[in-house]
Length: 335
Ligand code: ADP
Image (cartoon, rainbow, N blue to C red; front, side, top):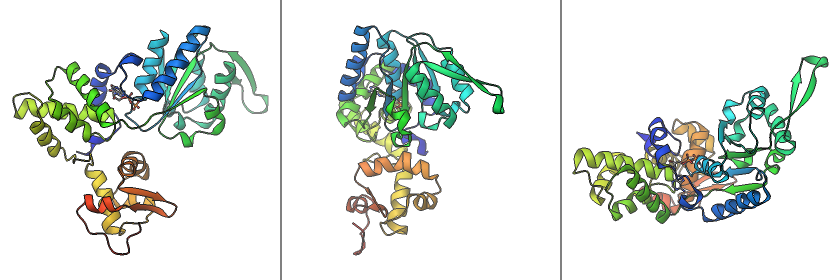
């Protein structure tokens, strides 16, 4: 069951995440800098009585981008409209959303880097001039009819800011870089969630869950629920350190938060490619995954935990990786 440490939301997550989401900026744990910057952007806009600058949030999945978009709307006292890059296949899809926005509304565009190209151009103009050019007719007779739209605030989210074309990136007045959470922040999140779920959670159990959550609130909340299930079925319902450990072992999440895919990637890198360097797609193929899955899901955490290094010639295992997997590095290892 590899999904237990996936930063992507599954159906089960979607069902409970609404209840666990902090609603106001003050309840949002961690991301100190982003929170402070955002609070300034929002308050100054409110003082001027204008829609705030468009906000781009970049960072890995599960760190609270959707939550922050909801908070931005709540802090502004405005409704939130939600759509995503993959849902916008044609510029007409975007025109339909933009032309029905109300003044001051917040538009959350998740996975903005996956939007269709022609829609991107329409978005530039909308962001800058609050205008949409609707094309009527086809071929040489086609004409663009400018349509004024209500001033709105775009909140874009992307896991890969580098994939955004510069003209789009430049039209955001504020870019929030979301980073992985520290263990003590995750502990606070887990305690808060346990309270909302009505679970009795011991301090050392919270620390154990936080330590295996890969710096990601979504994963922390999910591990918490797995531990709660285990405690309810196999123990007296109380989330103790012992139940936390037993549950996490059952779900194959190790002390460092590595799951089966991570260990498979490390294993391939170490055994098959003698520690590298090896290209990401070759590595992905050897564990039977899409390169994007390895790049977005497994690699950032492996790099961040100091197990894998990115080099111009490919991915390389570090001495810690050999140690963690209980293997001896060959004398000619590439680090
Ligand atoms: P993203 O949009 O970046 O994938 P979400 O905003 O959907 O992430 O957050 C995933 C889950 O993690 C939500 O249930 C949310 O409650 C929780 N979460 C994220 N960030 C925080 C935070 N700073 N404090 C408390 N809970 C958080």
